[in-house]
Length: 301
Length: 301
Image (cartoon, rainbow over all chains, first blue to last red; front, side, top):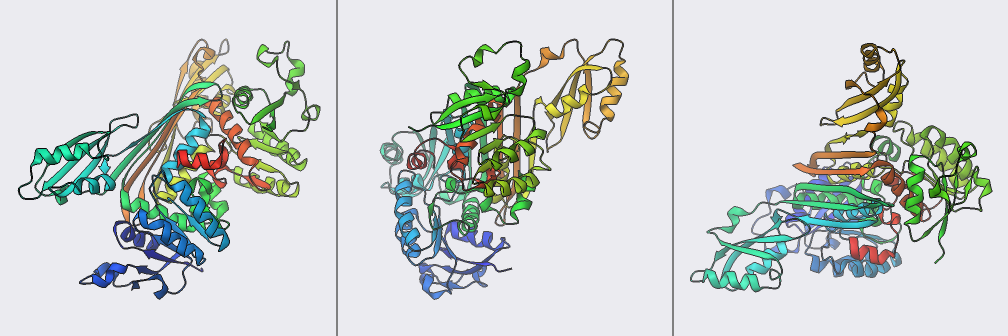
């Protein structure tokens, strides 16, 4: 079997799990890992002994698809560059308010260069979006609530860390129902910092100002970190003229492991699409799976 | 706005709700209802006063799509006939073991006649299939359990009614976990029938022989009938090399109302596909929704 060639860009939280997911995929071959920071590493992690570790994608043989396991803010430029070279991309760009404009921009580049970009291929945006879409065509009128957590919020943790006097911080997202969330923030203080002031500053920060926020002081934030996350999506709505139709979805997962797996499945789906940029609700679900189409239909439909 | 023209074939359980769902869809126009049995009705139901009720599709103006709200066993022939005339079809064919072969057959007819057939567009097969598909690309290794009910099983109720001495019967499907089901059967006996013999005959029937089956005698089966149904789908699996990833889906719904709504949403999706026959996992989820593509992406992804 001809395997398709994949590069992982970025060896952070998601990149590590992407390497696992590619190795577990019978139709994929990991061509190499691109990590500019590797130049500054004191030693290469033993997990990478068997892999081609390079500082830029040009140092690898031509790949079919690049997984962008890089910060969301770096995605627009990197994706555009690779698509312009005719290389398929997959990212898990997670800025909800901006992803639709990003898709329009990348769609043009991808079409012009005969490539496919899959954007926001994580779990939210991502598989949760498929659920919201499906719930809406099952019950076109009604309300959908997406409840996140319990789980770590990267964005809120970074915002809390930026507060003066905070040495390290963890912000947990706690669902309290109907799409409302409480923020449980755990802070490790710099020597001499005043907890009451830090707590007030966090609660006034725009990231936290609109949610119930409880700040706790701890000795060592790193002891609290667990990469589990959860979500629950609920809809109560109307099918035709029939009310009180109820549907729910939930998951409890290792967050970067799931994100990386969805990206890898999306890489496969991308190879089956016409040139362009897609969110995952624009792709047939079957395209994400490995295997014979008729066998999948017999087994899963 | 140019609305697309829909015919409902069959005015039974699902057909009635399909009329509702079409009326509630801003982009659809109900051209008429085809019901051969109408010739034998004593009176036209008042709900149909405003609609064109005919005995065969030829009596209606040309439609864009026909919803086949007819028994599954009649679907293969009717769908093939309509597709051969270049008319799109949607059905909720529910015989799991045969739907993949049916799709292959209809695919050929549809391609040759520039039409689109969507098959098995209900909730199982149907939206449940999207969930099973998604769960598998999120966690490629693992086990998925589909637990049906509590709800009425049409097939099992018909099988119980066919037992000698049974005047009327209802078989409820009760989930007992890990995809195992108990059958709760309620029978109304013919005068002089022996309950113990009827009970034994039901338990020995191939429809019931492999499941725990409890038979109860009641005075009037019709007093028990409720069209609610439920499902719960669970998967515990592996993303990449990370175990114990948990996901679940559930719904509690009016069964024919949901089936009809999904068929109507599928009718919309069918108009966006290239000629051929599709199960719903082969169609982008966004295609089932009414509205502007970019607005949907902004709102749901």
